[in-house]
Image (cartoon, rainbow, N blue to C red):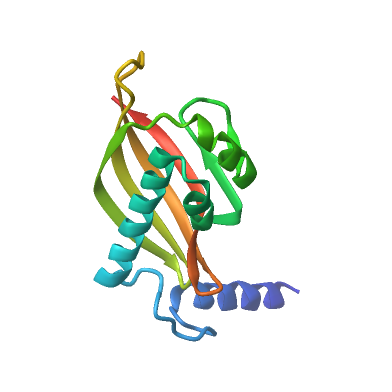
Length: 157
């Protein structure tokens, strides 16, 4: 029994340390440098996301989100589903925004982590005029399209 357990542990360790062991190589290997084209794709999707928020464009925003999307915003209301964020879109009050500091990481053959900062300007009569956020998004490739699976905001002072 102990011998079988050692063999299982050894096989699992080999699987972890040998990239591609037992798997077909992919155009999006984890740990590989992300291509400039793929980086540009994600930056364009994030810009589309913020334009949709600013313009309260439910169709454009919804087209970016995975069906099982979950998002966490800085308001402390907890995790939201795709349906919840779509229903809240009419309440958005983004007047303008500035995106910067993009970093992109491949997590697997069909997943990526995108982090960036955004400075949001709210309408002139808002109590709070500006907010700076650090954003983390997980994107997954499904059916040949990249969809946002998870969104997380952290307030930056």
